Amino acid sequence: MKILVTGTAGFIGSHLAIKLLERGDEIVGLDNINDYYDQNVKYGRLQRTGIIDSLEKGPGIPYGKLITSSTNPNYKFIKLNLEDKEAMMQLFAQEKFDAVCNLAAQAGVRYSLTNPDAYMDSNIIGFMNILESCRHYDVKNLSYASSSSVYGLNEELPFSTNHNVDHPISLYAASKKSNELMAHTYSHLFGIATTGLRFFTVYGPWGRPDMALFLFTKAALEGRKIDVFNNGEMLRDFTYIDDIVEGLIRVIDNPPKANPNWNHETSTSSAPYKIYNIGNNNPVKLMDFITAIENKLGKTIEKNFMPLQAGDVPATYADVNDLVEDLDYKPETPVQEGINKFVDWYLEFFGYNK
Image 1 (cartoon, one colour):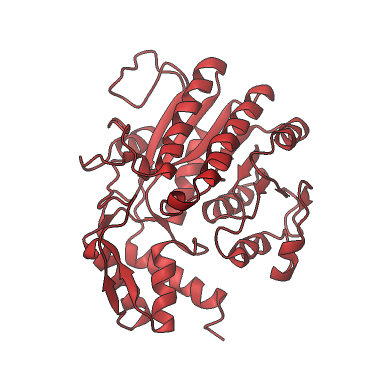
Image 2 (cartoon, one colour):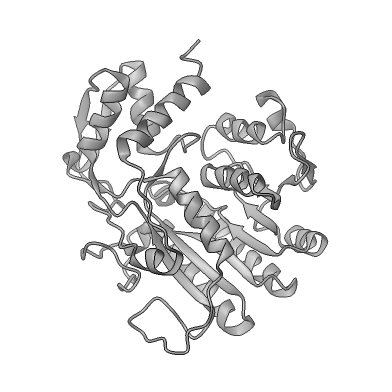
């Protein structure tokens, strides 16, 4: 297939593009390479796929121009804002995609408290442009990133896609719930098969520098204390990146069909629309997660215990029964294994091994 993957300078998008290329798909990657976090990590991901040959070349990537990878002729990349509607439409008209996987978004719960406009631009206007481009250029297979944060104040565990998600507690979560509603509308009106994936705390090599694993590892190596929120009484369904990518590929290959027998208590619809949780189905105590980092580094990390932050939820836990039943897939990478792989990457990328 010829697939547009947005967010390919990002964590999940870069991994997905590589896996799709390995199996022979033709990929166009898109990202605006913003400065929400360390751009060198983003440039490193682009270097990994042959879009640039050194980190120093990253700032010189031109806007709106397709660049072909030096290592894989089936991979092209374009620096573009999702909210640039005219450029998005031109890209769809030119490339004629078979499928789209939208992973580009303004991420982060806490950042949404201080920079709400960024979420409206990328996650609402940008997603609208994805939907409109699919509509006008006959793309009938759209998968996209949602988030476990949509469960908000829901306290019924494990989180099920059949649960009500009308009580978000951050603008980020509200924007992701909005994406699900917008996608359903386009599935119903225009027959676009849309699948939303509610990701649960994704971690692994090439991860985001604003996430806990990155922050904890960096602090430990620099001999600093780490802030442990909710006094360590947090449960997270940590999901390893390779498991996320496998789930995404299965979704891309199996777009949903309309369900004439749907009802309001299920996550299906009379439109070709589906929502899946993708998590490890095995919540881990935050303190056990930190212990796994300490085990790998061979050192104890000093901790500064803090109250729960605004926008955070104390526990996440994914019900993945639909994923198993529909796609015969269940994430299973153990946390210690995933952390070991991340730390090995971190030490290499930031030069500790030298």
